[in-house]
Amino acid sequence: MQLKGKVALITGAGSGIGKASALLMAAEGAQVGLLGRKEDELQQVGREIGSAGGDCMVLVADVSQPLELQKAVQQLTDRWGRLDIVFANAGINGLWAPIEDLPLEEWEQTLRVNLTGTFLTVKYALPYLKVQGGSVIITSSVNGTRIFSNTGATAYSCSKAAQVAFAKMMALELARYRIRVNVICPGAIETNIDDSTRTRGVEEAREPVEFPEGSIPLTDGEPGAAEDVARLALFLASGHAKHISGTEVWIDGAQSLLQG
Image 1 (cartoon, helix red, strand yellow):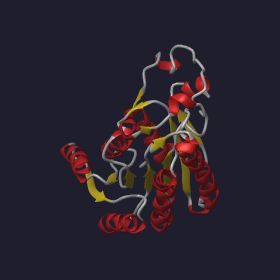
Image 2 (cartoon, helix red, strand yellow):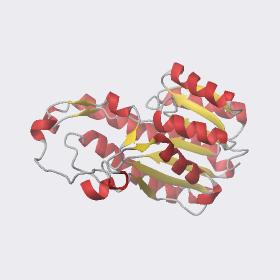
Image 3 (tube, one colour):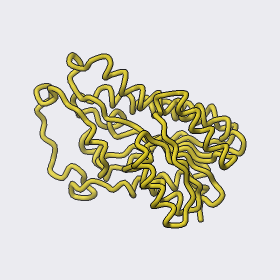
Image 4 (cartoon, helix red, strand yellow):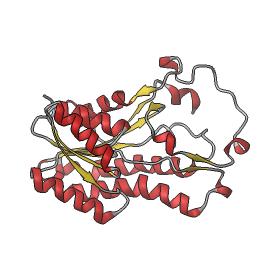
């Protein structure tokens, strides 16, 4: 198996891309730390991994809270003694609204979870990754990297663009420790993150443009699956990607080329 003997930390592991990646990495031999805010979701993922013969542990923490995250990383390394793979996947859509209707606290909350959460995840994992090298994978988005037409998604898009810059900075800074840092930029994927999206006044502010039919050309408009992204994360975590670092990979069925 590709990841046998490796230890992985996956944030946002209770659902969607995080869950799919946890199941796949565990199936490929990794011991997986399932980190998230909802213990019931994490326990369910843990049961699925366990029933398939995998090894995992549940870590309840909010990535935007330094002490919670630091404690979770410590719990993982106390149990398994190492850390090889970090998938900084946790994120929120937050409030999408024209800038004059976007409260400061909403802006700050989106950046705190998406950007500061990524920073903290890497920061506290780094001492353990340095021991033997490893792979850091960050979930960004097509928004803020190729697509800028989603009116009102300013805070979200800025956080996602900044994650790419963060990854490139880290790829150079950490290369001497044999730590690779890459970014996944999903388009429309069947997850529940859209359920948390709140909108305010975006229809009135949106530019009146019409995109061609079939917003996802490769699949005739059908969104991708979380498992599609999980397979990409597995590749970036594995030795097959040993010479890839500082790179963003769009996984969107060519959607962003059409709608950018």
